[in-house]
Length: 215
Image (cartoon, rainbow, N blue to C red):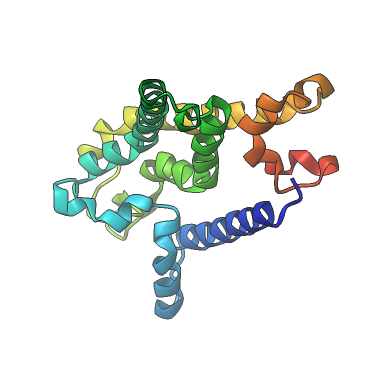
């Protein structure tokens, strides 16, 4: 737990979260200086990984398709993780090489650590539909896309998707992480090596007396 490798991972996590927050600042209802806004916008990929792939070129540039694509991204990551896990089991069994089989708790640690690392971005995506800005003509437009009018048209059709994403990712994910941290107060639970490996990403960055700081 005190190795330099874990220290580097913790430093990388803190750095990434720092720039995620900087990127999120550009979406607040403030008129920032052009230079400041451009600097903040540069780090947008830290909280919106899909922006790196320019999904608009693949036909997902519209509000509806973009919102749905971003909402199902964590689920797609879960499917890929499960497929990789069971594929490793099959390959390891057929080749009779046990070391090829992925460990279940380590696999869950990798998946949940990615979700936890980009939790700021996932939460921002889930709530992005409800961030609207007022205009001189009395209309409210989406802060991230001023061409979309709030409370009408495409916006209204995506409310159910946004609410579902909020409940699953923000409420569900947050509750799961809170439960895992609370469970660590049980000495018998934390002594389990499987538990330590599965939830390692929540505790590796903090001292035992402040293990709850991940919240």
